[in-house]
Amino acid sequence: MLTAKSLIKHYPPLSCSSKTRTQTQTPKKPNFAVPILHSPSPKARSLSITNSAQDDAGTAGQFRVDILSESLPFIQKFRGKTIVVKYGGAAMKSQELQASVVNDLVLLACVGLRPVLVHGGGPEINQWLKRVNIPPVFHEGLRVTDSQTMEIVSMVLVGKVNKHLVSLINRAGATAVGLSGMDGQLLTARPSPKSQQLGFVGEVARVDPTVLRPLIDNGHIPVVTSVAADESGQPYNINADTVAGELAAALGAEKLILLTDVAGILEDREDPDSLVKKISINGVKRMVEEGKVGGGMIPKVHCCVRSLAQGVRTASIIDGRVPHSLLLEIMTDKGAGTMITE
Image (cartoon, rainbow, N blue to C red; front, side, top):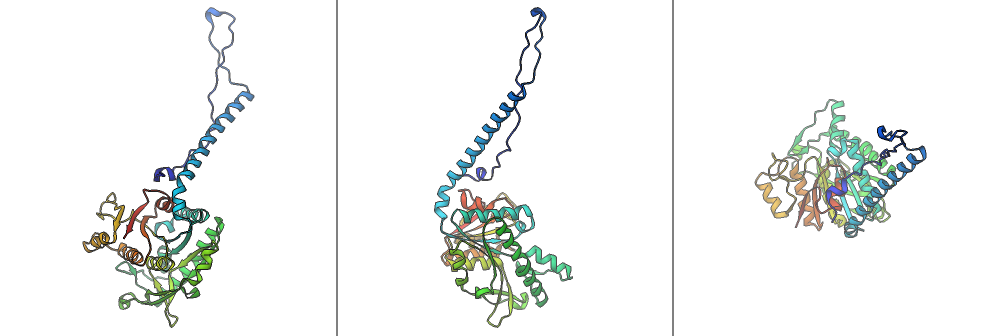
């Protein structure tokens, strides 16, 4: 069965080195002869290099074939299934990790999965708030959003981050379509019960995936940002994890995946090696009650639990700092974080 280690292993570059063969010249005086080393002729050297390169190329080719062969059960399991991925955190800051996520999405689409990307943009929002001298404020892991902050959030998420991701996916060989929650009335927002503390932070009141279905059916990758309006047209900033969970439920997704800046859910928040690989809904609820899950992980856990309750098969919180973590989660037994199941 395919392992995480084999999936991310990078085969070494082809070697062009060859061992120098030795030749001994026939000595004139056998009793005192010393062997004289000669380099092979240019033709012999060329043949040696060619054979070495062919051997290495053959090994590399076999390695790729083995990977594809071992991936087959996972491809068969998820082919034709909708996978909703929430993208944010460190994976958005690093160009290398960003390319990794984009390439993973395109590969998954190419082998028959139906990925939907939901993105945040916290780091980018913070940068723009800093430019206009507005300090970012958070309450229980959620951004406090006054009218000025809401304007920046809309500008950054809808006009900048979303279109950048669409462009990257298109350049990687797939066809992406960018949307906000307001497009096609995909999402209808309502104020948070804590609106007095949070401002224009909303919740998902209703999901209408009608606009997404033809895109998914035609092999496109929807890229959805978490800005939506209420019935009166007032825009709200909605937590991207929450949006991903609600979309996964509305689309009947097989799997919800949240990319984070930690390894997953930890038994001990101070010990990065205490990763919980798999846990039930009851088990993760108990961890929240015991205070083992806190901060920004709380809304992630809540949206996973809610999506599972609405029919999503599995929900995973994975380490977005690991290159190709999406492939590791979907195409290996080991996974790349914590999987929550019923």
